[in-house]
Image 1 (spheres, one colour):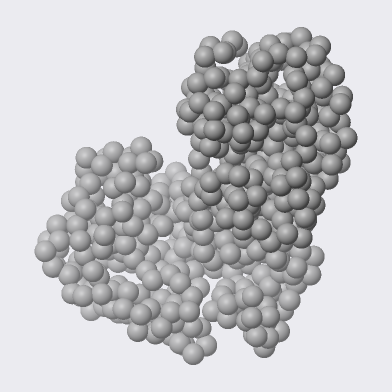
Image 2: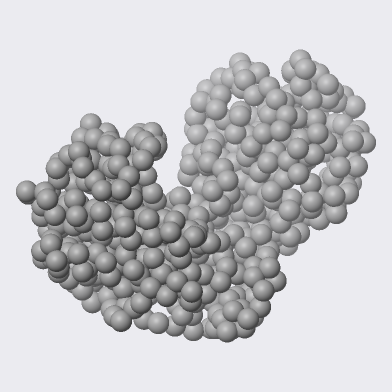
Length: 561
């Protein structure tokens, strides 16, 4: 083998395997259980040169394929570990990898992934002061260095900072999650705290280059230009449209207060430091290899998009690309094709763009689906909803089918009336302006305190739909500050404008189709027949997506550009 990667199912390990395979190398992935192959396949990485082998580094290793380069990315990365549990992988396991590698006849390099806070000269494994995770990493770092000298093994240690990218949900991500959910009233540490980052793509490219350079020099791999923690958090807050905390809490005070009160894990506090790190050797290697870090602010914004799309590890993104865009003063969450969509999908209340996931699975062609301003993951705007919709569709170069649900039908109808040359056709699903206010829906939505605490199970019951990821997504957003209140305000505004929408429907100049569920018929006639889906209620795109898709395809045919 060209390389063997221990810890190949971990965050760094799996990305490193993908990088090495992408370079045409023959790679052995040492794992306890093979969840790697499916992950690689889902990313479009060919596995023809991959060999997956079972290995437990906490025990002496044998029977593994020989390799030229040995990477140890395995680590037990968690806070609150017991000492023996942490040492088993981070100390004993690291030495076992080195011992096994020492017997390889064609060994070129052992690359051991350590950490930017654990390789300081004179460091000691202070389990009482640092906690099991960091202390075991310090001990493992010292043990690997000593063993390599004893066995004369060519070793390079890479000390990455906080590695960010899709799939990284611990460490700094926990702070971002609290920010996102409105639970970060103050920043831990002082205003000079430096928590450096490095992207997973850059770091794995760096690791792949190490064996081609001389052994013996160890590298701190991090972005020296990472903004200080207050600016870092402010950058992410501005991107996702939430307020950034203005106050800080000194680390010394956090150490004295109970963790239940502060929400801060004591083991994370040592990372809140103003220390800087010796990155000269890493920068020299990167320059020689032609590697260039992306700008830190851009990397942080892209990572924030990944965190929100995956619900901080609780879900899988259902459509790409995704991310925040500036739309009429709102940091708007948008998924799909911005410029050439075949369908533009506008959700109703109290949902978000995830409402459309079951339907999109049955549609041909690209779609564009935003969270309405102030709803779901989007920040509010002080501009009218009609102005927001016009700004959202400004970059669109096709004449898409505009599909709106429930409360969104009014704004969609007004846009189609004002811009008939911009829309191919209009599809209104369960238009609220043709219905009488449903008592069950009204009670569930207007009870703001209840909405802010509502579970996915109770929301599904209130809306009359099965519990699923789309409902769980909506319920999670309703827990965020201000969302439930804005949903109520939007519903009341929609009630006030229903007569105007009914009158406009009679004179709109583009083709209009209406789709309703048989259990949720219009209370007011549209003036032309509606397509009725048997057994469906107010959310047919959730409960009967294939039937809705068939209506769209049968009625509309191909979309013109």
